[in-house]
Length: 126
Image 1 (cartoon, rainbow, N blue to C red):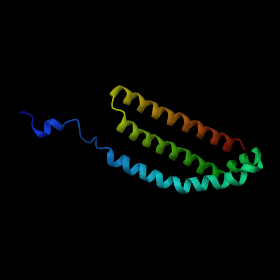
Image 2: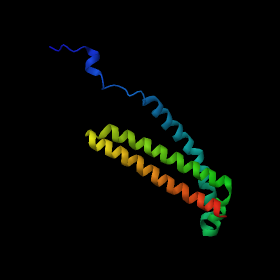
Image 3: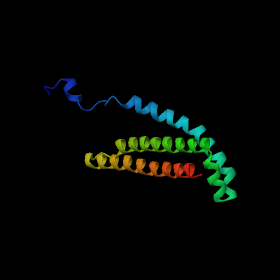
Image 4: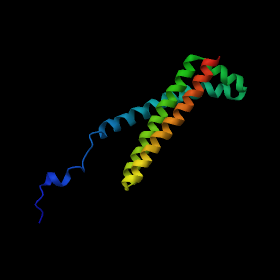
């Protein structure tokens, strides 16, 4: 027989009140990735066979550079959120989960910023 109330048994086990916002953010980013991917791939597809100078000229255009920057940002945010869900669901050891969540965020930020830096360098050098 337990003398705990039902409420005291579930304190600390429930929602962190972030689930709905996380869910909506991931859905919105996945929908945003569809047009962004098409808008980023079409100019690149036209320039890819023409060589390095054609690719540089393509992304010297501010619209193409902005679309590519948005694609990089949304992609890595979506990746970070998706990996976060997987880590939270399947890694049960608290220290491992914390380390993996930090590594996930760090990886997505570093690689995303490197991609954004590359596009910005191309766009601003022309």
